[in-house]
Amino acid sequence: DAGVTQTPRHEVAEKGQTIILKCEPVSGHNDLFWYRQTKIQGLELLSYFRSKSLMEDGGAFKDRFKAEMLNSSFSTLKIQPTEPKDSAVYLCASSLRGGNYAEQFFGPGTRLTVL
Amino acid sequence: QQKVQQSPESLTVSEGAMASLNCTFSDGTSDNFRWYRQHSGKGLEMLVSIFSDGEKEEGRFTAHLNRASLHVSLHIREPQPSDSAVYLCAVSMHMGYKLTFGTGTSLLVDP
Image (cartoon, rainbow over all chains, first blue to last red; front, side):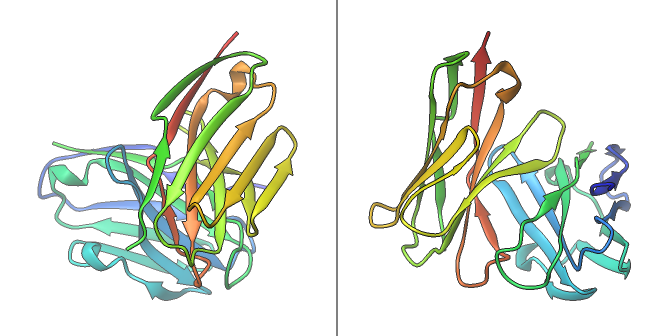
C-alpha cells in the first residue's frame, strides 16, 4: 500500500508568489490534515478535513492559506501571497476513520523556502 | 492553551544504552499522549500511544504516563544507530484529532 504522497518535495518561491502544494492520502482514508513544521513552533495544524468537509481551518492561518479537498484522494494547500515567514516544512497526514484518536499517517513533507 | 515542552533538546547515547526522553504538558484534562519519530527528510512515524497512567510498551519503546505530574516519558531499550532521529511528543484532549506537539528531542545513537 502506498503511504501519503506529497509533491513537490522542495519549493522555492519569491515573496508575493502563489504556490500550491499537493497531497494524496492513503487510499481509503477519510480524514486529511495539513500541518506546518518549524524549529521554533514545532508542528501547527493548518487544516483538517473529515470525509472532504472542512472541520478546522487553522485560525491564524486563514487569510493567506487555503486548503481544499478536490476529491477523496487529492488535496491542495494554496499560499497566496507568500511571505518569507512562510518558510517551513508542510506536512500532510491522513487517518482511516472519522473521529477521535485515530492514528495519523504522515507524508514526507514539502520544504518551502520563500526569498 | 495547551503547552507541550520536551527535554532534553538533544541527547547522545551509546548503542545499547537506554535512552530516556521527557515531555511535560500543561492541561491536566488531556487524555491521549503519543510519541512520534521523524528521520531527517521524512514524515512522522507513531511509536506508541497511551491513554492511562502507567506504562505502555511497543517493542523497544516504552511510554510512562503520570497525569498528576503532567509528565510523559519515552524510554528506548537497546537503541541502535538507525534510531537516530527527532522524537516528538503529541498531546490531545477531548477532540482526539487535534494534537499539540512539542518541538522535539534530537537523538543521536553512537555506534
